[in-house]
Length: 448
Ligand SMILES: NC(=O)C1=CN([C@@H]2O[C@H](COP(=O)(O)OP(=O)(O)OC[C@H]3O[C@@H](n4cnc5c(N)ncnc54)[C@H](OP(=O)(O)O)[C@@H]3O)[C@@H](O)[C@H]2O)C=CC1
Ligand SMILES: O=C(O)CCC(=O)C(=O)O
Image 1 (cartoon, rainbow, N blue to C red):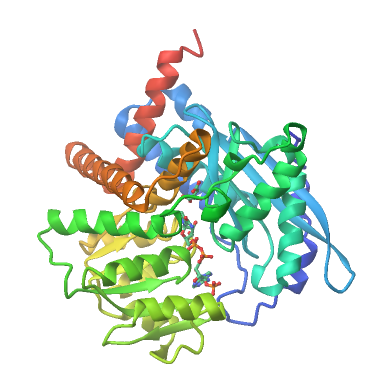
Image 2 (tube, protein in one colour):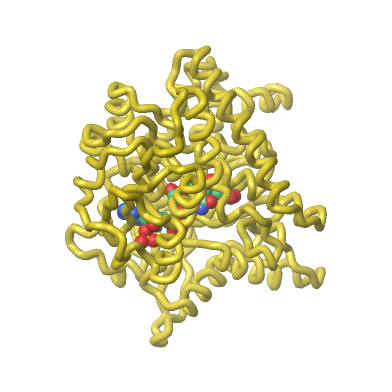
């Protein structure tokens, strides 16, 4: 593991200057939110709930490794720019570090630490043999050409070198990255490390295109996992999903698949938003067409089927389900007061801040927390990795059936834990995950 440069967090990555952040636009980068502290606080709350042994809490309170890399890339205009990349490896007690790679202008080391820790809880909760990790590069992927994007990805992968690997740390897509990014990462890693054995190292990343060793069902898996949770929630609450309405913030991988799959269950999406703006359609958007539009145009901007609204108006739209599927810290006090819904399904990681959460719970709005609701992605990533190891190709039906079983079990375990311990579902999800991790630390008697 290369040692992190403790000073480099204060250095501005060169591309930041090229990130156009129009005043007041959703891309304006203001960092006041201590996401990692929030995750640490939830860890402490859950630790108290289950009486977690202090040495386990201590180990889990910080990541095992934090890697910061400044790497140069030649841009289309011939200029060489320095990019700042991160890989945080939180814990690998249960298996290799696992988690996505984010490309976004707001990425910071602390955010990546928070996201990496959440991967540890998520994998333990889902009973998949992985620990937690996360990566990111601080730049706006919308602001570079496809060729530049490829060079940034290959340079970053090269710089990561043997800090990733199919039995050590396995990246996957997150915000701003996708299956194409994973194909480039796999190819670069294979050329670098696999070259000695003259073979492709497919298992070094998941979320690959299917033809390059990806699995059927991964692209939609995170949205689908949210849907499975909502179906369970609707049974628990005797709520009829058919004919109900949803508001979605973020119409990328997670949000768009969630809307498309829910539309098949009769749920209509009445409000959507992404970095380009927000729009409503009381009759319901055609989720398929909107997904195709975003894939072709890069955002919801200009989609003919909706009326533009402000962000404030968007959060006031009355709908049964609110699905934050963009970034962390989107639902604070003001948003929580505005929201008029029955349930929040957290497709995104950390979308609700603690002040917002307090208000939502007081208002009686159910929250299906991120580490449960969006764990379908990493669960199907695990299925992809198993298929790569065994040189198998499972059908989409097999993948879907396994995911449904795993998510349903996790949903019910979280609900039961929350009832038994009289805690909210987020603390319950953390508590279950921590108890599983603690059991292994105890069995291994690491401090005899
Ligand atoms: N991909 C996966 O499998 C998993 C993802 N997640 C989480 O889900 C969330 C979304 O990830 P994913 O769908 O993969 O990412 P994508 O990049 O595919 O989509 C992100 C969406 O959020 C929008 N967005 C970004 N910034 C803002 C903003 N400031 N305000 C409003 N909308 C914004 C994006 O708009 P635009 O594209 O126009 O910038 C885009 O619509 C993240 O929190 C991620 O960590 C969790 C588990 C797995
Ligand atoms: O599929 C994966 O391995 C990681 C998904 C991810 O980054 C997440 O769940 O936040």
